[in-house]
Amino acid sequence: MAIIISGKETSAAIRAELKKEVEILKDKQGLTPGLAVVIVGSDPASKIYVRNKHRACEEVGMLSRVYEMPEETTEEELLSLVDTLNADPEIHGILVQLPLPKHLDEKKVIYRIDPKKDVDVFHPYNVGLLSIGNYTLSPCTPAGCMELLKRYNIEVSGKECVVLGRSNIVGKPISMLLLQANGTVTTCHSRTKDLKDVCRRADILVAAIGKPKFVGADMVKEGACVIDVGINRLPDGKICGDVDYDAVIDKVSAITPVPGGVGPMTITMLLKNTLLAAKEEL
Ligand code: NDP
Image (tube, rainbow, N blue to C red; front, top):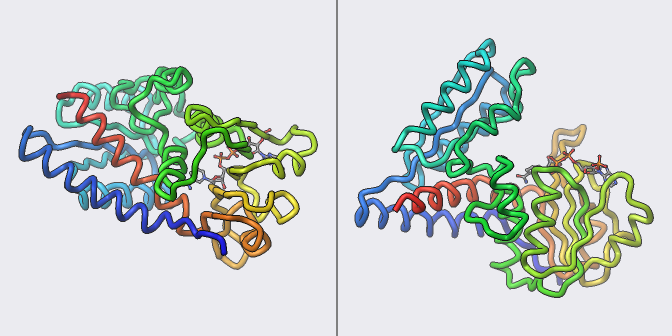
């Protein structure tokens, strides 16, 4: 019987721990961790993400400020807000919700965030720290995957880890974190040859390609642990992962479902990063 790795339960447990830590920090040090989320324009999906982040922050007792800027905001205005937040002592984490409207240069905006407050861990300085293994903040979704492995006692050290996908947000950083945890890591992408054979080598298979049910039983080793990062919407409106859950469930030893697996962990890790960034102030 495969272990179903619940991100929902794990996330709730971590948030309860964070809430306690925030209380202690407030009582003993007089410090309230603060997150600023900046959203430009009115993309409905982005608005929902921002609302969820705001609620999550308040639930654990952190300060949450949301800055809603109109679609026609200029780069100068946005950079100026980032500068203000960089200098704001109440704010320990800054997140600019992506994607930004086309006329704004995402790189320029992200690179302007003070790396100490870069709780999304997109700034090249933090990506560099991650690659040399000297980091405090780790990127939210990949950190969520690692936390799930840890809390379900799935050993990474010495294991064959295959990551499907090489994006800067998921594939590359999760590869770095698995390597840091002493896994033997192979990162695959659209040009990888013999993809099925490579995936079948994996003790731990991480799927992050954005293709519904792409990973079937023929790509999974007997007894593998499968972490499904994918979030895909099917024509009937249902959400599914990059892994064909029903096809692999009898073959794997552990798997994250979609929804309820990696998804709920991302915001939780954002809260954790905000707390860590605040503690760096002490
Ligand atoms: P990207 O589109 O940025 O990257 C997809 C990666 O998959 C690329 O590296 C691409 O290769 C690779 N790829 C695409 N098709 C194939 C294929 N047929 N065979 C092998 N590799 C392939 O996606 P993201 O990393 O941003 O997201 C991946 C998935 O994770 C999405 O479903 C997304 O919704 C989900 N996601 C979930 C999050 C969560 O909170 N749980 C957070 C972020 C993302 P190449 O580089 O060669 O083009």
